[in-house]
Image 1 (tube, rainbow, N blue to C red):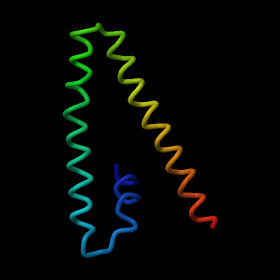
Image 2 (cartoon, helix red, strand yellow):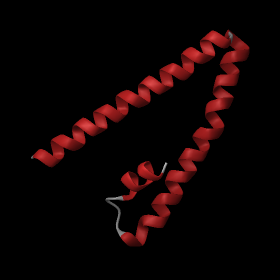
Image 3 (cartoon, rainbow, N blue to C red):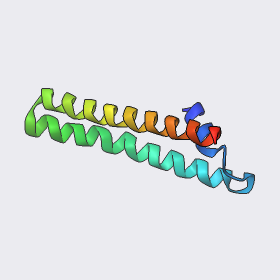
Image 4 (cartoon, rainbow, N blue to C red):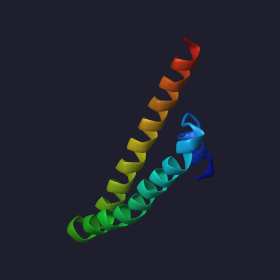
Length: 79
């Protein structure tokens, strides 16, 4: 969490950094609430296996997004 927060706020000017950290933590908190609720709906509607499939899909999507972000970030620094 600390690494993500510092990466998120590294390009933001000092005067706005605390607002950016609050925004990050608010989005993180919403995910901490919405994630289990969404998986719970999948469990109730489709069964445990599909709940795990949904969670896996979210994780793979996050991984792909992170890899694309890292790749684009390294391309920006090279040019």
